[in-house]
Image (cartoon, rainbow, N blue to C red):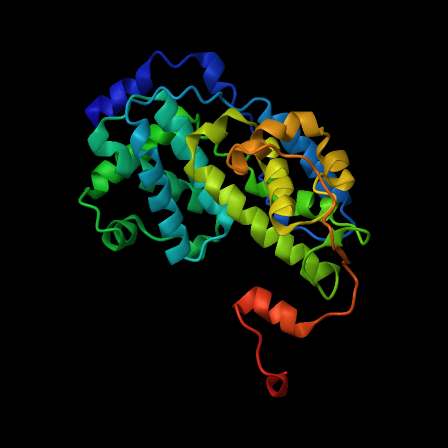
Length: 304
């Protein structure tokens, strides 16, 4: 494939290759317990993300990146893969396409191979599709040899080290850290679990938005995740928007996150402000209001 991408673009320095340090795969959002292990893994990820290669926007086909990312997201949804698998695939593609001059006709192939490698790294063996199945389901017109060659090129580029850090891996820890029983809300939640689920769902939307826009790659993954939580709290009308627990857990200040939060909010000025008529998190549940919020209209009383 174009002489194996001109032998991995010999201009790639040894220093860049060393940035992919080997360490255990996180999956921090799948952990439970008292949070000690999550805090330890958070510190490890924060250290490792400092060594991630800087995204320099060097690809001449940067305008096609969104289409490639949407393709990866679609494949992950169809195969019911964990979000961390999908975002890891996007990270593989970004690292490779930014450092290597990929011919335009091979961009889609690079995206699917990145997805395939992420599935190998993150998913159970029985859930990994064969190359033939993946090519067939995606209606790709590449040969098995071309797919395997691109796979080896990407593996060689990464020195066979598939570990990386993505914003989604921080989300669960940051959302949990941001919750407090004293938070003031514009909506009703029965308990802290339901409250956390609502904030988590809104945060995930912002993380997905960031994955589609290459300009967010200027920020560290942890900063994107923390800013997404703040943006979610602003969107939901939660006060304080800048949760003290989040800032303490992430070690970021409002100043550190402000630029990313404003980008999430469409460039509008962001300032934490208490809602006018706030309602405590542990107030009695109005099931009509909750149903209207979740489904668009409240069911009849007899249905409740």
